[in-house]
Length: 382
Image 1 (cartoon, one colour):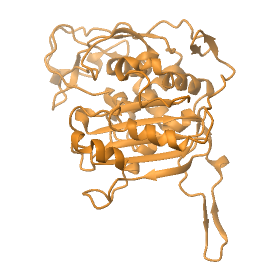
Image 2 (image 1 turned 60 degrees about the horizontal axis):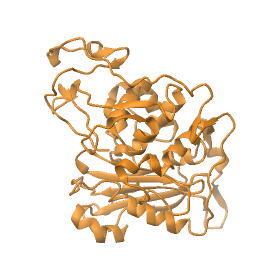
Image 3 (image 1 turned 90 degrees about the vertical axis):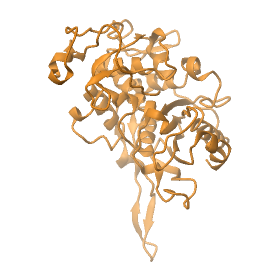
Image 4 (image 1 turned 45 degrees about the horizontal axis):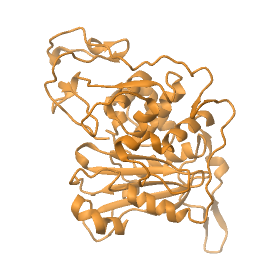
């Protein structure tokens, strides 16, 4: 962390970072660094356990929920094209909301695995809305996120873009749940406690901290998407810091609105690690600093060194999956029709947003979009 901050921190204006790593098989915390310099402003804050917006790392929950729903498979075609929602934009929330991809481009029809790997925002929003925001919340909570504790109707479509604060420990638990084939272990920082006489007060028992949060089949599919470098080459380039030479590894980056935070998380079967980079005072980063240039080099170097004595490992295909080519399917989902190629257009041609009801904006259970030219742009980075 100190190397990265010293080399890139001034240019990108990030002056702190946090890293937390665990053994996903039992939840034992192996490393936790809460900050770079205790004597800097905010340096006493343990950023590894401080809520921040997670950016697109949160999409791991959206796409896990999508696969589990059986409405999607890893090659479901999703149209990446402009969307103009009638509300949720602007300071008041009553202006049109136009989500944009990080590269400010549209990419046409892509399979789900590439939409996830390249962290495209518009496909993620479409997927979230078709799966249902409550189902995405439920998946995140099941996988170990503890900070999304408001009523479901408090959360908007920016959920999948990482618009609500969680901690690096939350994101680590989610990644570790995928890494242990759907078994969730909440983080275990203490393994034993003895009193002054050497008597055991507490001994950690991982068997009492194990919950099958999702099926091994769903976890395997999401892990296969996150570990295939081909799925992210379009936006992040091939063979970069999200890969480890000679080793299978799953990874995902995230960057928040206006570049306040950037993230990288990833895992192998024996090690899961989350890295956050930013500033404790929430000062934005400079020069379009994203997870790939800020957090990813730290994650890459740590994972490479921590796994240096461990042979390459990956998962055997679990029973109950079908494989066609390089793709894996829950049985019966090989040919599910895409629920996201098109999108319903609002019935009103002009509108007063102050008079709109929630029901007015719904068609087929999802928020409709406006036709015509957009009137205001609100961006969210990937």
